[in-house]
Amino acid sequence: MTKQHKKREYYVQEIKDIEARVIPVEGNLVELRHEQGSVANTIQQITKETGLDDFEEYIQEQLPEMSFRTIQRYMQIATYVDIKNHPQLCCLGTTRLLDLMAKEKDKDVVSILQKNKLKIPTRTATPDQQKQFRNKIDRLINRKKQKGGTGKKKKTDTVQEKGKTDNKATIVKQASAAIDLLIKHSGIIKKEGLYTELDLNRMQELQKRINYFIRHINDEA
Image (cartoon, rainbow, N blue to C red; front, top):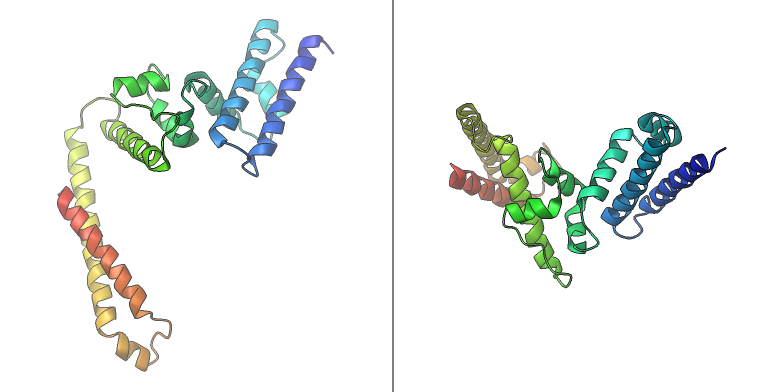
């Protein structure tokens, strides 16, 4: 076995060791995925330089418990997410980071945030500040998904969205009416034994939540 073969095997084992730490969630998950992706990038570089074999086939053979697409995602995180200089990016989680990079020509996360005039929280950011940052990123991702990468909403998309909102409003109002009836007749329902587990307090709480959704839908309309 050549020195390069041994080197690759060492890095494959390192990916497995990191995965073993991920399962009980020891440490920051983004940092661990970043570390796995960095190691996979090294394996790819060794494979390319030596021409030993196909990188994808090698990964699938050595890491059958992990899909190649998953490894590619971690490689993206390692390549485009600068957690060394911006550790607060870890608070976004792997899914948000990947969604943020999706369909971007320049996938560098810091560049994407700068382009959209979003500031990364400082190292001393509070949990509440981190949450606000995540909310801003979620709104950016949603806008990207709505635009479909074109920068403008299609007329048909707008019509479809309106139809979806109307459908939501109808469903929520129907549910609200049904719960109103349940609350109104809860005494009779219990007395007649039609439904022994009816909890009036929980029904009223559900009614409050539905009323909130109705107001939210009306505000969007």
